[in-house]
Image 1 (cartoon, helix red, strand yellow):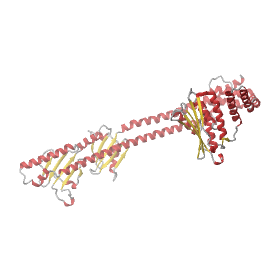
Image 2: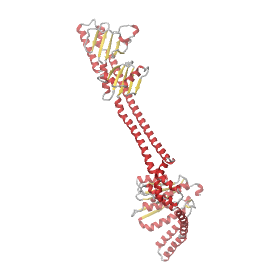
Image 3: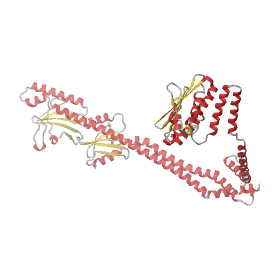
Image 4: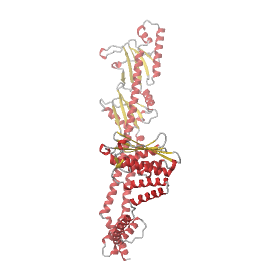
Length: 592
């Protein structure tokens, strides 16, 4: 009771000592490092996933912009090609060549037919706002909307460029006739066909390209001015896409670059359309991007709070559950004034109470354990001596069996005499063999005795057929009891459920210094799965099932004494049953 009171009074001191002990500090440092490692892994994984998502979004934007760029290029190329084919129109050439010789009615019909051709082109290409054919020398215009305009629009021909971007944001696609017009010649073309693409028609095309995708598509000139957009309210769309300002800045400084990217306040990707001299830009809304990324920010905050909470909880729990009990154990181990002070009194039921109990028992039984250890060694020595006394002498065993054999002969009981003779030879062989090699003929004779015993045991239910030993191997040597386990396996497992017509065939042959010993039975064999499992475990050398343990040992002995090319091989017979073959590599000195 006095010791218990002392421990109770010093409990607080032990706790304070442990909180300042190196062991407790190491515990805190270790758990802190573990938490920091997981925290760092979490942050790294978080940031990595965020970067992967950002790259995926950017790649998606790039692929879409590239696809839309090709669409616009194909659209403009198709328009130019169609305009070029119109220069060969019969009505147009007729108006150009024979205008003065045509009557008013003929002119009207020719103009009407060609205007209808222009209207078909405009209907097929929704991007075109107007398609007109200009005759500068005659000051007339044929349009898809009206056959003849009253006034001719003055034009500087745009330096005879096929594609020209106007200040109002419209795009003109022009085919001049003749085709090889040169600005330096300052010649007036005979006629030219011009398609005008306005921001309004561009807006419809961009809206059609965007489809149901989120975001906005814009067309900008090389000064960064927005010409058209996919939305119906261009100014509101521009204001709602903050990343567009960064895009405009990059376009102004793009130089010879063909593409641009932006990822501040959203994502954007743009490509330059060389023929038109404008930029196609796809802006992904920031709120759509931030929605999946918001999870990563919440995850970071939750991870931080969790790590701090775990560290605090662990410090409190470790101090209460480990520091104080360890202090009690240290105090008990350091107090040497009274042997009873080594004991710890604890009424709890947790694992530490078990440790206290085991500790007390360890202290009380230290001397008795030493004494018991000495007594145990003495008893083991006595047990070994007694075991030697009770060993059966091999000569007593097979002498007794041969006595039965002679008694059976005296009574003229030939079956028992033969059985006793074979049994005696069987046990005489297995009790006399050692690690020294025996002749193969001796091993086969031992198998013949074993077969005779089994024939007496099973009668006509199982028949065995033993082949002849190859003459060149009659005096060859091998490890004893190497082949008999294969025959025993056929009886014990292949024939154990066979009620009649059981057969065991034993074959031998010698080829290229290799002795093949094969045992076949007509039992049930193995399933494909069982056979694969046995082969795999045999290769790994870890077959421990009792039913094939002897074969496993035989396989190991063959590989150990005759090399890795030797061993046992299993397979199912096609006609039913099982086959096991021992492959033994014999060198010249081993069998000659």
